[in-house]
Length: 140
Image 1 (cartoon, rainbow, N blue to C red):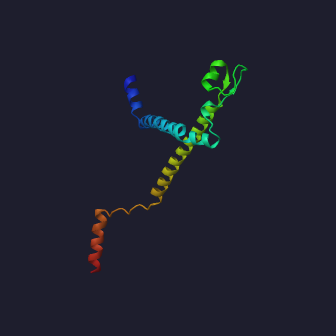
Image 2 (cartoon, helix red, strand yellow):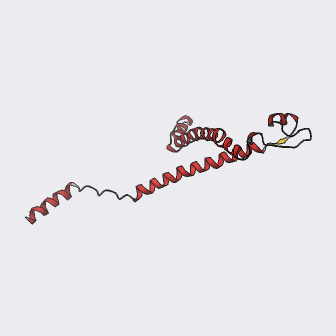
Image 3 (cartoon, rainbow, N blue to C red):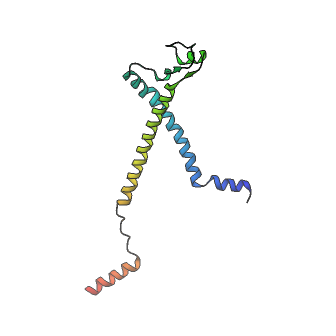
């Protein structure tokens, strides 16, 4: 088997295609979550803790940096420990993990409901139907 045919057989397996779809959907879902965090949640959290802009939270590591500078300006003057971006990413991860947990939990409950539902009895075969007719005629 040539390498091209072997690669084609590998790439067309169900698991590889499922993984590719999962990665694409995951990337799009990540962008949605980032937007929810940056545009909806972080401004509310910042307002609740006193109009703090998390993206500009940092600790200067140089004496050249004075308090009150924006993060971009502070980085130009010297090294800074920019923990605000880390807080945003951490909150993003927690929300994303919770969303994935809820999706998996919903899928598991649907699987349990399918498994708990009794299967419909199988229809009688032609032989069973014939035997039932014979039995019924004998009863008469």
